[in-house]
Image (cartoon, rainbow over all chains, first blue to last red; front, side, top):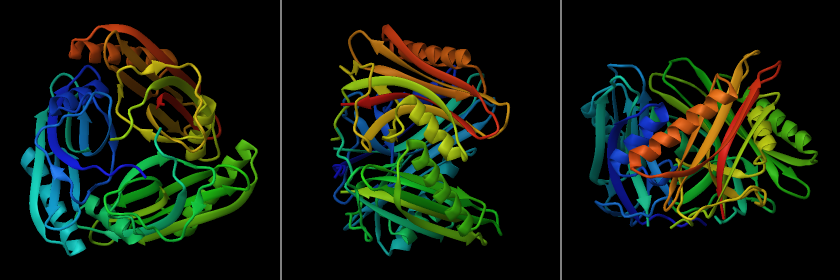
Length: 153
Length: 153
Length: 153
């Protein structure tokens, strides 16, 4: 099987670019994950996965990541993204991500509420929640927000 | 290279939640795949991949999965998802997934027809098709459907 | 960790099908990647990743791929997809993909400009760019375009 990740780091960032995809690229760079090959996953914190504050992954690595992102080229748009990782006291956890036309606080509230709902639904106790979030107002160039729970080794 | 999966299991499920993403989470739980890290793949049944009825995968595992899903928060919406795995008698097969505003039967018909087309196009004989499908009518809360061919080891 | 790819191949193709997903399947087959399990990645060329002209991967393999694609069932639509891989002279590179309602030349220009922007942003020198692109005009059946940088071993 594929190796199960052992570490998790939560990050968020915003960026602008000449194109939508380079705005996304710059948001990833701002979040510290712009030089990785992100593989989108949905979205469980593996058991015994350790929270690590600082990423240390070689460029180009295939990196399982749960993330929410949004790109806009509408000047004046407020966009936000947030991710929450819920830690259980004895087992796996859950990861929830959100992006939308809202403030950072609203995005944070949404992901926290989703993690709480996911734990309730599973009958599990929530020991801790770690959140990363970002927002921006789109200017003359396309803008992007991303919030990610990076799963690594 | 990444290890090629050796087993396939087809599942489907529907769910409701307070948010769109938790509705999707609950649909995954109903399908029996809510505690995995799904990695979306497009969508070939590897040669010698064995059909297994019951999943047995530890929580948090990185799990290659071909799936179709749909989430709606429009009360009264009928939504459906289906997946079909086509088995050849001598080689790899194909996987097709579909989701839409339709009945479970329509979604099933669509994925069956797509697998047949994919086999014809490749000049391969279709030995067997395995389908999983689900439908729901959205109520007061967001609803989600998912149908998946899980590839594992 | 997951193994970092060592080879890159750029391909593009167009196709038609009875359904949107089989049109996509046929575009993948035209590009020479229709029998793989593509895992979408965003989108870095790993260091020391070698450009190889011809793919040689067993069917069903899990294959990290950066790709842009577009499917349309609107008769007369012109659709195009392009991918560009930027090679640095000493380190990792970047991959950019694009799809839209435009010509092949416009899609190519977009991905070239995005790779140049990504290198500028990183303060890196661009040694070479390799592009693959395709376009089609949708007819009576759904049509699809795909352009991909396949990362393999």
